Amino acid sequence: MRIRVLKPGMHTTLQDSGRNGYQHYGVPVSGAMDLFSHRVANILVGNRGDEATLEMTLQGPRLEFDQDALIAICGADLSPMIGGAAVPEGKAVRVRAGSVLDFGACRTGCRAYLAVRGGFDVPRVMGSRSTYEIAQLGGMHGRALRKDDRLPIAEAAGNIYPVLDAQLTRSRLACAFPNWAVNQHIEKLARTPQMVRIIRGRHWEAFPAISREALTGTEFRIAADSNRIGFRLDGATIDPERPLGVLSESVTFGTIQIPHGGKPIVLMADRQTVGGYPKIAEVASVDLHLLAQLKPGDRLRFKLVSLARAHALWLAHEREIMTIREAIEKHLTE
Image (cartoon, rainbow, N blue to C red; front, side, top):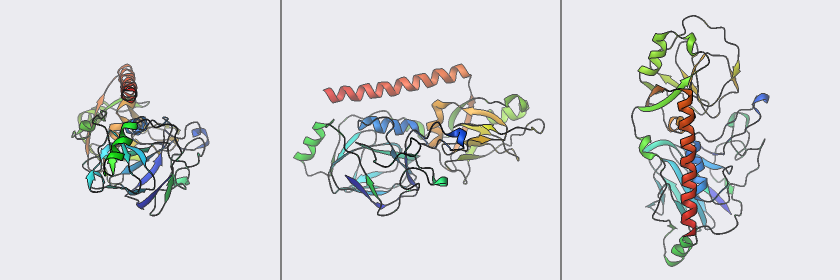
């Protein structure tokens, strides 16, 4: 099975959970910006967690299916449609062969994730199918999708939603889907400003109280030159009490660096492996998917939490994903 790209969209790449284990060689992790939506989409179609999804940014692609397929779309609302009819998000959707999936206006969020049953059958590079465009690694020849690309889909054993096949057979509709959906936290994406929780960074104490209070007590906007490497923030200037001679050291997804000039940068999925700017804070892992759904011009505020609280929130988040998986498996057996 192959999916033909009729229109590539603004920026559509293949991403999985990332290229882990190679940072000491200078190779970034990459992977999905919103791992929550990526994981839930894979769960909905019965894929393993390490299968790649299509990450679609602001304006999605137009895709033609040459065979019946089972898909799921999670994350931002990019107005998905098949044959002029809306395609629901947060649901498994059986698509008829020959149908065209198209996307319209971005109504909520920034990035949507498309999973296909069986997964995208592109080679793993250093253990990952994620696209890292700067080095042309992974994905579809190390780049974003282009018109007339053919995306190969691996065969998957078993039919996990036979009721959807029956619906498609009985009707003339281009797709079929159940009457239930999973909670994608779409409602959280509409909040403005978005609240993002942080913990103290390695150099927190090197910043004066007025700078720390500015970080947590004022509002920021995502700057226009933000991308998958980092989000630049417009707002209060955050300056250390004195110049810091910081040696380059490891950074991670969510590290908040303060470069010369005092404008914070939040490092994202395609971040470099080391950084030499002071690290005032780290975004709590539980909120990275919310941060990833912000687009240029969107507003956010930071809320400081303890490391213990961040751990507890992350564990609750993982339990929620387990609950989603168990609920879907229950529907499959009914």
